[in-house]
Length: 244
Image (cartoon, rainbow, N blue to C red; front, side, top):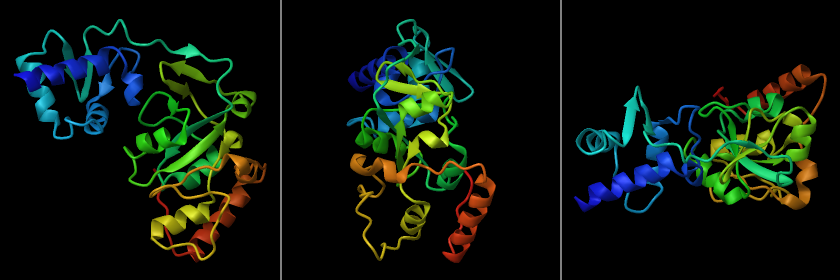
């Protein structure tokens, strides 16, 4: 009974108070995908054994007055205290997000648009970005975002509690490792020459703020031609990178 009450309290806190503290973004009606809630719970000590069937049992037995489940989504019925999404006119100079390795080539040439959430999430440090990114890829690519450039190129930066959000991130505002480096990581090969400007994190990629200007994503009107050149280089490396 104590464990049941503990799970209910945890779910109520995440779904009805501070989803942002767990890297979650509710939709306009307060719903969060069940699998995203499970990802967040599994990162917390004492909740790693929780499965969807456990949550459904909690809702059925004890939580009908507290939670609503609908087609793989869940929300707290009392969600009036969820943090509001507000415009952020002066965000930190650099924020961080993550993408899958398989989608990194697309990001290089098209920027980032939301997939799992209605907004692209951003956080203030690379370590947290990497931890959240592991929900979508065991070795995600951490990308630094120059917020002023993003806004100058027509995007918006908003804030929801501890999370920053954006409807899209133009490629000119993004900074990250080279595509070849990501391909080498995916192949499992160690680079023959150490790239000191973009040091590797544990299993992924970390950004060196001292050399961000050296790794700004390319901006060119002949982007299609550059993309073809990247694809040729990829074929030579005999490594196929799938679309997300």
